[in-house]
Length: 431
Image (cartoon, rainbow, N blue to C red):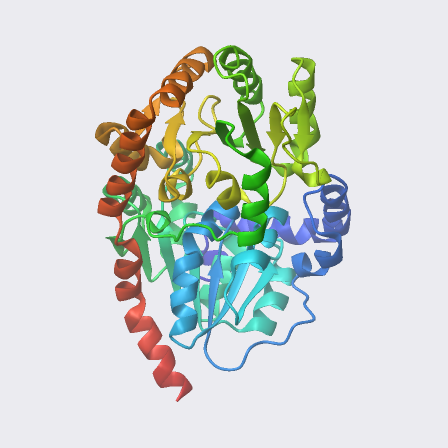
């Protein structure tokens, strides 16, 4: 479909993007002031770059943010091992920091351009990707339409779509069908995702499994870990990872309740958005607790009750010192955060009831006794107390979780097998 053959909603969207393009500098400046853009790299959001295009076949992997990039890391590493240059795009400051820390040599990160035709064209003119992999569900219409017009093969990997998003897209059936029909293949996490994508008009859908289950445990600097362990010593440690507003108060309340029986307890809170570190610290101070912030190079010394880990890319460090982890985003209506990294590092997992973003993973963990759902802050404190006083039960939970994640794996090999025809074609064309 070209031009007027597009659905009216997509034509209107494209015209609106063209009309709004002159406002892009103002929008980016507004976002930069709020910490949502990297001021030194704003030009990338307009499709500009100072980096050269790598020689040879280039596979472009587009990820929305940290979660999608985390899911794609092992896939990116395998693509590099096969000799392909890889361009990785994302749209958040935190994902850029993860890219800097975790991408393999030979993989280039860029901020994805704003979805204006001029910026998209500039981006594609420079990078000229030979294959585009969109991770999960970050569907930017102009990016997709322009890739299709240039005959760049499009594949969705680790695709997922929630019931809520499915109902929302059903209100624009022609638009979503026009976008999904541009994809050569949609590889989905589950049968439910496959049914939803097919119902929205995706022509070729296959279930590959969830790449997040195959992602490696996050690395850690050995010296940093040794230093932190020596500071913490033998204190009992619990962590609340990737928390959202409205959850830290409950975690702080749980700490206050638990310290009657565990006087040396250290609670580590890692907010999902590190820029909230000062706000989280204030919540703990208001509750009468002593606080240290990692972003200020403060240490969790013996007099510190709450350690705010408001840095990027250090959950692997936190999970290695905390045998009990509450996964955030689950006591509020966010949909939960990915528990796989914590599981792979031996943690016993607790979570709230709102985990629809990872429904199948949590359902399997809960059924196997590898995680437990708590209804509120009171129940959170109760369950943490039990796990602190019963190390054998805690170890059983962690072992059940590890076994479950191992059984659910295999998505990486399925994904690579599905991509092999495209990769083979790239090799032939480049030769």
